[in-house]
Image (cartoon, rainbow, N blue to C red; front, side, top):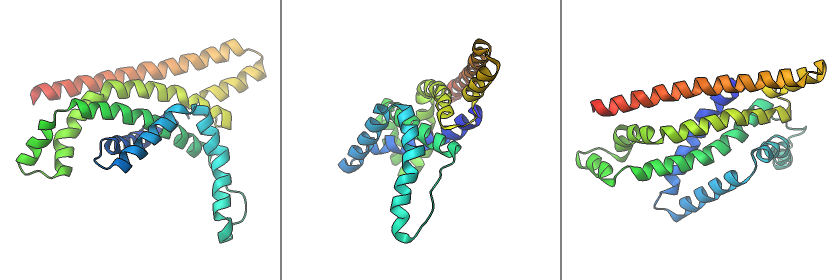
Length: 213
């Protein structure tokens, strides 16, 4: 459950964070302001509070919004979806800052070179900017992934059977908290170590590809 939640949240956070980073460097002041408000809001709120707002508060807001249309009954949000959205928006806010810094590290001449050989903005972004962006942003994204793994423990507060919740149940039943919380620690450490190996491998491949180019 922990790994599934983290893996499902990662693409959501990356995609939203990428577009927020684009908005933060847009020429439109409205987009820049909206992106700044987004990142400030979700970086400033505690992750657990964001989770509670989405899991408990969003169904109330949706119910009231749909009431004029005759929608009856209580709207419920799946705990997995609520956890994915809550952790995803927080992850995307931090991801946007990492990607924005990576964008700034890419010289403007890279854009101009793409336009000079007849590439469109989309082609320049896909063929020239994105490969460099990924390489520059990888260390920061790796750190965010580690934080994301740890943040998945928060979903135990809304009843999702992740590592921490199962350890908590086992500790209460057996009256042996040290054993099961220790096992939970080991599981998170194993996930973190495996993740570090994967990111190190990706960074190595990215550096080799850059050298070949």
